[in-house]
Image 1 (cartoon, rainbow, N blue to C red):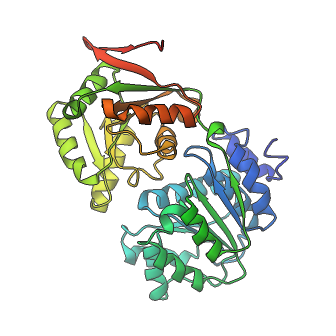
Image 2 (image 1 turned 120 degrees about the vertical axis):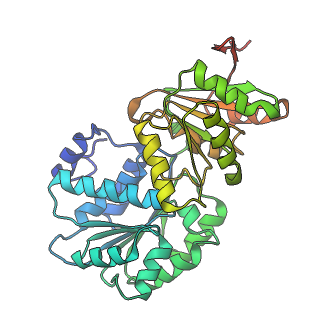
Amino acid sequence: MTFQQLGIASDLIDALKTKNITEPTQIQKDLIPLIKEGKNAVGCSATGTGKTLSYLLPIMEKVDPEEAAAQVVILAPTNELVMQIQREAEALAAASGRSIRTMGIAGSANIARQIDRLKTKPHIIVASPGRLFELLGKRKVSVFQVKTLVLDEVDRLLDDQLLPSVEKILKAVPKQRQMIFVSATITDGTRKKVAKLCPDITEKTVASTAVLKQQISHSYIVVDHRRRLECVRKLYHALELKRTILFVNRSYDIPMIVEKLNHHKIKTTGLYREMMAADRKKALADFARGTAHILVATDVAARGLDIQDVDCIINLYPPENEKVYLHRAGRTARAGGEGRMILLVTDRDRDLVASYERKLPITLTKALVANGKWIEKQPK
């Protein structure tokens, strides 16, 4: 199936070609027809499978550039994801020649400047729930003509921290609206919350077996718990890593890890929720342009990151389940490139390794670094 067969307008198809996108992904094939028909929908597929375009393409066709009012609101849980979606929407509008105004409203930005920019009457608003609700309270933004509401990374948006703001925003937009929910993972608890917010809904889930990229190699190294960072240092040199994400499970470990790796002359930066907005922005900029070779992050902090040419994912501790494994693996091998997924495990983690192989279409190769070289042991 092609984008043309999905009914996408020719100017938008031409815009996709400028990004070398010529064939729709499975989630796009599933969601685009539902959204074009005006149905409420849930889309669930792994990171890097094109979920953003699955809703942006049909939404762009519905926006009326002549109507000077917000017609679409897209909510996202992190400032980075807000700005990433806004940039993608802006680029799509520009490349297609459509006079559609977009605006990102991140909670970290200067609110006075946001109020001033809202005077341009953007057609598509991408926002963090807290800041949008704050602007609604100040009566600086109008959502009375919104026809479509998107919740991106819905599992995070409907957690206990963000749900109150989301519910208040839902009360502010018209009751006659289309609702779209997307995420890399959706729990049964999230499904129940979605059903309460929007009873009439269709879910499309792309099975994990359909989204693991073939160009990712999967390996594990057995290490002593106290030598994990030493192993990271050896991997950095043996594989000559240039742009690697090091996943950790606890955000308060990140400053210490960054300090230790930098002490060993490995250019490293960190990303965690408690950081100041300016520091987060600098960390991402350093990693994107290659000033930092390793980005240390938690799963929450890394949501929404879309950085090309990530050569390797190192898991300082194993992902807790196969869904988290998929989410992390989706950060590498983007745009057809190759990538590595490496787990650092202790003897007690062997059951997890077997679990990933059993639940995902992968074979994890045992590896080690010896005499400065990467060595893979062939399975017996």
